[in-house]
Image (tube, rainbow over all chains, first blue to last red; front, side, top):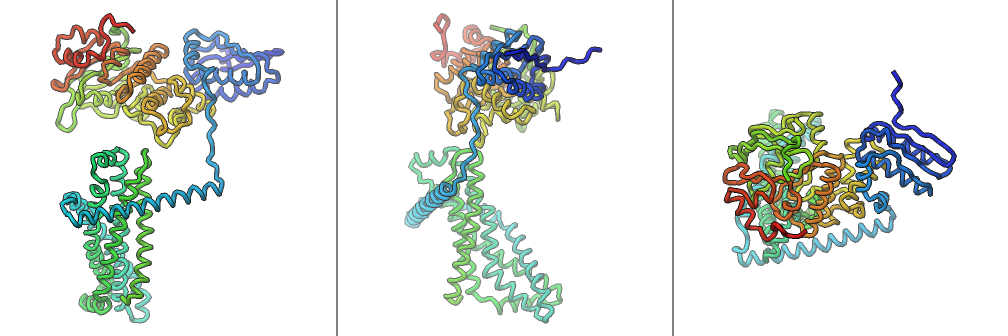
Amino acid sequence: MAPHPPPIESRSAPGELTLVLRGNLDRATVAGLWGKALGLVEGQQQSGVLRVDCRAVTFCDSAGIALLVKLRRLQKAKGGSFVLDGLAAHLHELLALYHEDEMPEPPVEEKPHGLAPAEVGRASWLVWDASRALVAFTGELAVEFLAVARRPALLRWPDTFTAAEKAGVNALPIVILISFLVGLIMAFQGAIPMRQFGAEIYVANLIGLSVIRELGPLMTAIILAGRTGSAFAAELGTMRVNEEIDALATMGLPPVRFLVLPRVLGAVMVTPFLVVFADLVGVLGGSIVLLAMKYPFITYLQQVQSAVDYADLLGGLGKSVVFGLLVAGVGCFHGLRTKTGASAVGDAATRAVVSSIILITVADGIFSVLFYYLGI
Amino acid sequence: MEREDKKNIIEVEHFTAAYGGTVLLDDLSFGVGEGEIFVILGGSGCGKSTLMKHMIGLYQPAAGRILINGRDVARAGGAERTEILRSIGVMYQSGALFGSLTVLENVRLPLEEFTDLPKDAMDLLALMKLELVGLAHAARLMPSEISGGMRKRAAIARALALDPRIIFLDEPSAGLDPITSAELDELILTLNRSLGITFVIVSHELASIFAVAQRVIMLDKAVKKIVATGSPAKLRDESPVPFVRQFFSRTAAACPQPGDGP
């Protein structure tokens, strides 16, 4: 049996290179032929004539046509002439469809320039722009809040209660679970070294103070940022992408009053309740460790009561109101600032969560200093 | 022009579509000939897009089957399903270009995923597809930077990337101005004539249907069935069904009447 003829063959004569193409010129074969064919043409010293013989081509798809176009462009760039032999009439028609002469070169992909001053300038401008927008948003939120305080009928109460339900009641299981585990783990880790000094009962003081003053409000706020802040950003972001927010504005309904205020008020209303649950369950979680060490529950409870006073509880609840405001406000702010495109909503949700967590931490630091000076 | 004699590339056999317990389309049977421009017509909410989504294998029929090149698209799995899907191109109503990629990268994506071509070959091929739809100059732009009509044309270029034999178009004229819409019609006719591509078009834009359609089926929401089949002119002039005549007469002003010039 005769060997299968190669799909590409070159014949050189003075001033002329002939490429003979055979068989199918489809995506699969062109992938193998491309580099070889281009290499042969580029390796030709004198430009002269490039003759492509297609008489033995049995099938040609658009990848085959692309190869012919590329060979012709390459040869023309070298200043030579190009002859196409034996291409079937319908393939000539196909070739003509692509208006090869008018077609530009494929764009060169530009790598973004990483010039330091430009990057610093761009980043600074973005921070400045976001800060101005945040100030404007805060002002608008305050104005709308005052308007609603004067005329409560202006607020969309059903939306407010729905937001409260979603941010509060629906978040309760996860808040309880996390607080219980944090209380339990902290008590366990604290009890091991304290037992060496016979001071394990003071685990109750540790848990009582740290959960009620710090961890209860902080954990709740972080859970709220992950659950509710991101949901607000995604919800408002999708509305922005779908032009629903523009529709509201053109109907004369301020988006901040209509969409943001119910969500913010809803979230702020429920955050202290969530924190009360988090405190309670965190303290209960800590009790498990002392119960396992044969201390009666009442002893643990009395020890907690002796360590914690109402100022600690109220300080924690006061902080939680601010945390709730920050999480819901920042979530809505990033939702309203969503740009267009599929990734924009995801970006808004991510920004909402990251900014909320940073702001919560900063606010918690400020509260710590403030409480210290106030003697709380 | 009827193409009943041609071999059918798509066969829809006793097809029923249902969501939950609600039947949307009931026992439809029809075929689409190879190289035909076939239009699914009907009022809003009659199930045109639902029918198309079943034809491209996104949903399972409640009963019956849909064959593309003799193979059941909804029940095919794995490699067979991929092979069927690679033989079809789809343009969604909004274009559905990927917003994070340039126009050229959108068209190049199927080539990157399904071929071993070198990068410069893929770039050139993608650019050629864009030139085919008159968008080579917009290759480096992002989808958000081009108009709705350009997005639809870019989506057609992407649908053409793997040289499909069938292209499905969902409402190609919706939201376009008459001139852009006419350009799109011209593009469909050119691709059909030059490359022999079969088109299945979901539409209710009568002007566009008269310009391109070789055969039309008309769905009616009330009976959930095909109420008329034939060329657009035949449906307008000869249909015995009052709903069909009413549908055509409501927008008669937008359609060329017999004897009108080009």
